[in-house]
Length: 440
View 1 (cartoon, rainbow, N blue to C red):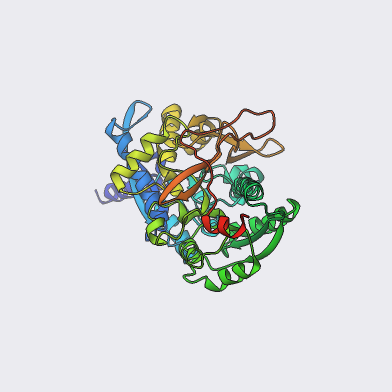
View 2 (view 1 turned 120 degrees about the horizontal axis):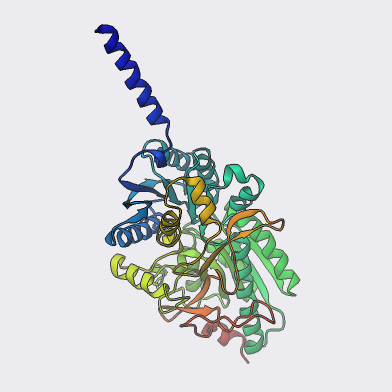
């Protein structure tokens, strides 16, 4: 009897070890667990969570996701990465999501430095991780260079920093032409202000080169901290330089004091480029109205529709959360249009089978048509295709207390390509302080 008890004990332990060794997707589950990771004490992470909640609720309201012969609801697991302050915290948060919380998938991530670390952890565990915040190109070039290891990574939003730069340089061309034509400025002088962050390093060097290549004068380059609260020293130097355009490269909170203090100083220059804080609907209040006429690349703008899905998401988000969605709320698109339909097509949660389906899909989100790009040698990048008909992003301008879409507006990617104009676009306005100073 004692021997039999011992044998049963050994058998049970063996079965338990085998079960624990199975990947999360292979274990019997009643829900699809999706980890949502981001800096949850900040709007970027809160937007990650809000977008995911909205998608999960919509999917669950219709009965869940059809996985083979069963319906499975989505269960979200929140993880605060604290990545704005500590990369180790971000890596640990990812590890806990996968090993302790046993999530099937992960969405989110914001700062490129942290997401690169989180990406490695997810790849080691063969967990599909769709990024919804980090723009660094290395996140996707890794897929092409080591497909077997990194194939479980996909970019959700934004598109690569190289294309973010391209949109910003389109902004630069538009505004320079507008100032030359209307204010008779023969040579445009540009000040570059770029936060000290990995994603912005190569972008800054490229911007310096592009300004000169376009026949403009570089007034100087300033690199404040991403979380600086006072940038009057930088702005005073820019004012003395006589710059006509202030080209910003900012994704963090420094964008608020920068725009507010620039307005207070009444600097006769147009702020353009990227100031992610400027895409928030409370930016007007945060800057005390001093952001008037500043421009930024962004993803959403109320009243602008890239396709039939845009209005549903933007208006639904505003109604539920009482604020405009930011680009990190693209977790909605990632779950609603990327993951859920891919799972239904594949009929499984097996990550290898899902990768094969997802990387070949072409589908619409709330912002664009998604098609995953390849590198010059035809290797998968799992990056977003940029350009007419696919992802373009938006450029907005604050005009008298409202965000207004100003690009793409009659834009041609090449001379022979069709014009692209999204519903709701308006012309760019020149700040009165510039008209007063330069128009004669």
